[in-house]
Length: 230
Image (cartoon, rainbow, N blue to C red):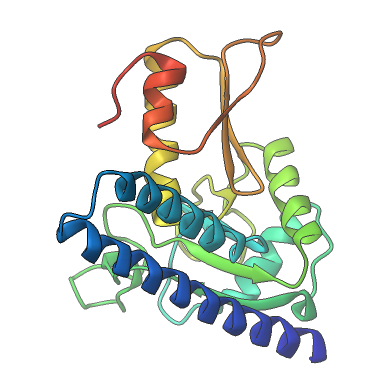
């Protein structure tokens, strides 16, 4: 319990520092609007990048479980413990700071009868299950186990919905999710073999014996793959 309180206080303090940084960026943007020079454009871009990387640091203990059937009245804590058990990871309730579905509710999360269908029977994808753990090592264990057991399904998790394959990945900021999506698309179009994330950073490698490329910005997509970002 003390560890959980400490982590929550730490995240609150970091949020305050990020708000200060965000205010600095807003001030610089105002000066740029007033015409104080193009040099500020580079400064603002760098500050935005720094802010995004600090936002990503806040998620260093987070995982995101996607495509996991969502049912009315489900227990997110029970779900992540069941997922971990299926992946062969020893995870306890005391290891979990929080677990919740994120995003707008959809047909997956409606009670039976809301749309003439049972809970979990709707079309489309269920909302991701976002989990914050007490230690990054636990996050690394879960994501590594998910890679080893690629193709694992929701069977035997105590759900009434038809089994679906689920995926466990480290959680990314909104900007990094978009960036990683475009990196994957560019990699496929240029026949690059590997694109992945590690500790919130996005990497690509053309082949087994080629150097990895760290991709921080959308401009890097053009530099690395020779194609324009969208």
